Amino acid sequence: MDTVSVTCPYCFERTDLVVDPDTEGSYVEDCEVCCRPWQITVVRAGGELEVVVDRAQ
Image (tube, rainbow, N blue to C red; front, side, top):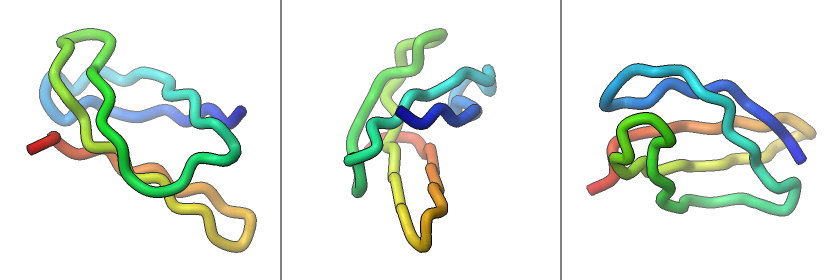
């Protein structure tokens, strides 16, 4: 499992997000603090992990 520190785009609280090693693409998950929905995009390229968190539509 990979753990990355992210900032909620609504309440701006930092939290750790656990990402399964097989996860790629986009999914929706709620903030643990304010419960608003995040659009999470996971990209893996060349052994690097990039996680982008935006407000879900």
